[in-house]
Image (tube, rainbow, N blue to C red; front, top):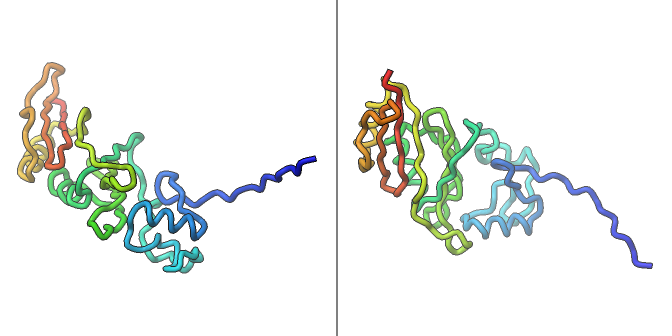
Length: 196
């Protein structure tokens, strides 16, 4: 009679951002590290890949799980130059950076979490060597819903920072003021505000 395998309960992995697991064993930590191309292992592990006790890494890094996600739907952009894009979004759209993984040896990061206009925007770089090549932004627009007294200042700031005007800000057939710009990373942004 064949032996019956006994299923052991598996401990739930700790999550580091929106439910993605942090590996609990050294081999998985190394695979994670190699996959994202970071210059050093995940801060939850020592240089040999052994898991640190909670108190050993408590202050190593900000905990992205503590960066609150704002809004019920989060755009996640893959751009060529996520760190530069985040800096641009601070100038153009008043973004606040609430978390970022450090850059690898090629200057890329797998994750940046921003707040813009009361919502979360996340972005990261392409990793073609891991099956995630860069693809140009197309077929979508990030729309900012603004107050009627705010839209002109938002528009000016974006254009002054270097956004290209695609559709000038104007009153549209639905009665709101609306316009569209494209940022230097190829992402389309629209602004909408009521006229009254």
